[in-house]
Image: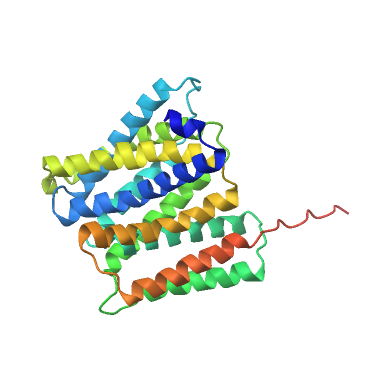
Length: 295
C-alpha cells in the first residue's frame, strides 16, 4: 500500500485501525454465516480457520524483509488459541453475531481485569464501578427471557473470551508478535484437527463453507493481525484498548445487514452497560502497590 505509507501518520493509523476492527468483527459474521446456513460443521470450520491462518502468516513472514528468529514454543498460548477458536465456532451455531461478539469482548476484558488484580494492580473506584456495570450488562444480556441468547452458547462464548484473554496475556512483551502469532496458529492446528477427527461422524462441508473458513483464517484473522500490529505502532495502549470497543457494534450492524438479524432492546441496553463499563475501566489508571520496606 504505497499510498498509505506516504500518508500522514495520523491518517495511516486511522485507516489501519479501522480495517483491523472491521476484520475482527468479520470473524463473527463469517463464522455465524457458515454455521447458520449449515455450510460446514463447527469443528471443521475451526480447523480450516487455524490452518488457513497459519499458512497465511507463514507466507507473510517469508515475504517480510526482516527475517525474525523462530518464536519460542509456547504450548499454553497455542492451547488457549485452540480453545478460543473451538468454543467460538461451536457457540456460533446458535448465537447471533452481535450478542456473540459482545459476550466475547466482555469476557476478554473481564479476564484482563482479573489478571491485573492478581498481578497486584490497584484500581480506582471508577474502575470498580465500571466492572460492576459491565458484569451487570452481561448478566442482563444472558438472563432468561424471549430475547436472551441460548444459555449454552452464551457460556461457550464466555469461555472463548476467557481463553482469548489468557492467550493475549501470554503474548504480552513478546519480541515479535507476528512471528509468535504465526507459531501459535501452527501449533494450535493439530489440536483442532484432532477435535475434527473425534467428531468426524458429524463432519460436513461444501465449497462455500470451506471458503468462509479460509477467509476467516487467512484474511480476517491472519491479515487482520498483520494490519492490527501495524496500527499499534501509532496507538497508545489506552487507545488500542479503547478502539476495540467498536468491534461488538460493528458485528451487530453486520449481523443486521448481512444475516438478517434483529437488534433487540435487550442487546442495545446490554451493549451500553458492557461497553460503557469497560470504557470506565480503561479510563481509570491503575496503580501497583508500593513495595514493602524490609525491617
